[in-house]
Length: 334
Image (tube, rainbow, N blue to C red; front, side, top):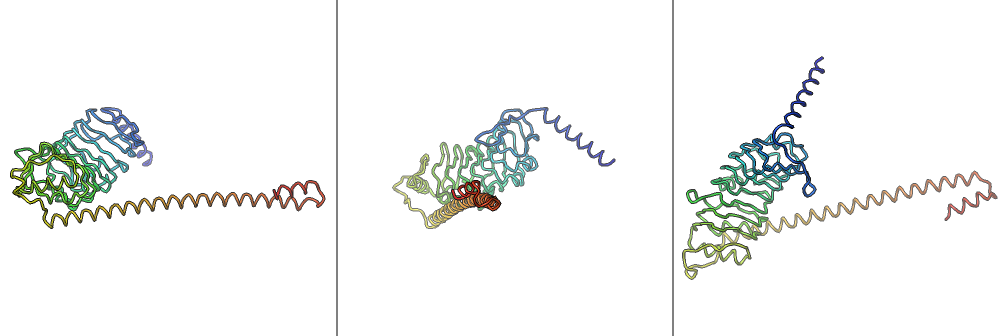
C-alpha cells in the first residue's frame, strides 16, 4: 500500500514538473559547434530555467531579467562549458556558486550589477575566458587578492567599464598569469599603477586600454610601462605621461624583472606539460591501434587454424585414393 502511494506521489510530482516546464519562457535547444546548446537569449526569464537537460554544454541566458543564481541551479550541469549571463539584473553571487561548474571554459557576467565575485572563479580548472565588463564598481581587486594565486588557465579577461571617476580603484594585481594574452580595461579609472603589475602577464599580446585614466605611483613609471609594453610587441594605446621622457629612466627594477622571469619559467613549464600530455595521448592512441590490430590478426589466425583443422579431419576420414581427398589436399595448401 505504501509503495503504491509513493508511486502515485512520484507520478504527480513528475506531472506537475512537466506542466511547469511547458509554461512560461522556453529555451531553444540546438547544436552549436557539435555542442548541445540551450538558446535562452532574450526570453524574459526571471530565474534560472529548471527544465534544461543535464547534458547541455552551452547555456545562453543573455538579456533576461534574472536577479539571482544559486549553486543548485548549476550543479546538475556536469558538462557545462559555456555560460552566458550578460545583461541581466544579477547583483550578488554566492561564494559556492561555481563549485560544481568545474568544466566551464567561458563565463560571461557582463552588464549586471555585481559588486562582489566569488574568488573560486579564479580557480576553475578549465576557465580561459572571463567577461565582467560594465559591472560598475565590482570589487575585482579584492576578488583577485582573495583568490591569489590565480590558478585558472585564463587567456582573456574583460573588466572594461567597471570603475568610474567617482570610484577609482587600484589596478588589479593578477600575480602570475602566464597564459593571459588579452586584457581589456577600457574606460576605467585606476590609481597606484606600476609596471610591476604587468610583469606576471609575460604572455600578454593585447592590452585594450582605450579611454583609461591612470595615476602612477612614480610619474616616470608611465614611460617605463610604455617602453616595456612596446619592446614586448604588445598592442596597446600609449599612456599619456605628465613628465618629459628625458627626465626619466626606463630601466625596470630587479624585483619586477625577477617576477617576469618567474612568469616565463612557469609558462615554459606549462608548455612542457601540455607537450607531454599530447605525446602521452599520441602514444596511447598508437598503442590502442596496435592492440586492436593484434587482436584482429589473432582472430584471423585462429579462424584460419580452425578451418585447416576441420579440413584435416575431413581428409583423414576420406580414403587415400579418393579424388575428393586430392582436391581437399590442394585446397589446404593453396
